[in-house]
Length: 432
Image (cartoon, rainbow, N blue to C red):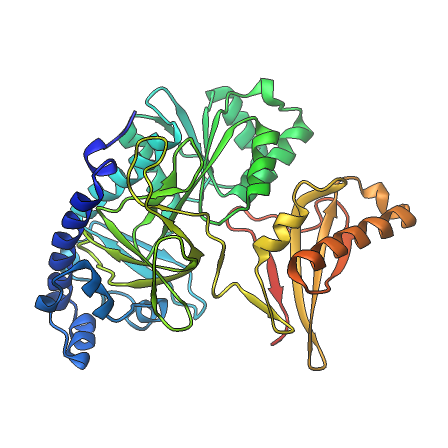
């Protein structure tokens, strides 16, 4: 079943024509209603009427997260506050959150976009979905909630935390879909194993995961432990929240809702536009957002775009799993290191669990990296020869992949702090 066949299976020329019409409208609206955009355009002599083709989008200056911080809370809104029916926010490093607003029409579009990715993944009105995202200013919980209800799915708004209760609800209510961050759902699998909640004692069949990226290895671990199909969806508060893109059941890239979000790939260091199939930073422009339009927003997420029609029949451009973030990239002795590369090495290895933490320090003028890895059996800490052999094996594998020598420390099971939301994988102590 396809949720919105007209939008999700539109031909490339028809989609580009629709995108151009909507791009012209959103640029005009932003220029006339948001002083920030008017000033940016006027500084370079750009007018809305100069956007004639889709390629002309490259004339528009980028928008960044700092721009949202600098205009906290409402200065980037394009409509009066009385037309905003919902506010959401994400945490900011400066202490002030990134604030976004939605009109009634924005809420309708948001729900529809999320509904599309749910149906693409295999959800239907026969399902019961347990949402283990936190509810509140974070867009994940409410974003998925409204999309699930739009499809007709029964929603269990369990929120995050209290894992034993989550498992009780899962069994008693007969939940068939679980919605949350992959790291928390993996932690929930550990608790389930301890409580004897095996595959035959629950009805889960599908996972809708977002809020943080996860490697193919972690996906395989989740699918093995729960016996489900694990799909990934992508979004960010600055654009809409969840609903920008999501995987179908074929798991071969996340379908972007292109009629609402125009994607570009750029070279991070230069801002130069790149083509389909080239790896670079994802830039998104909202095409229908009324509350807070975003023109050429730099996501800092690294991915690749694929325009080929999917086996499911959807023709919208797909984005690969996020390969890393430009701001998460660690530079260790001149080498670019992404946490996801280390995760790929660790997940699925014998004797160790899927939870890890990367500690970065500076010794003199040299950067040093240490990887803490949990053992499955804590008794192994007493078997020094086995412990040393395993540490050396992991160290060698990391060096082979990263070309960087990392210290590896095996630690007791459950000694690395678990998160109810996004997992904290990196602790950078170089500037402490």
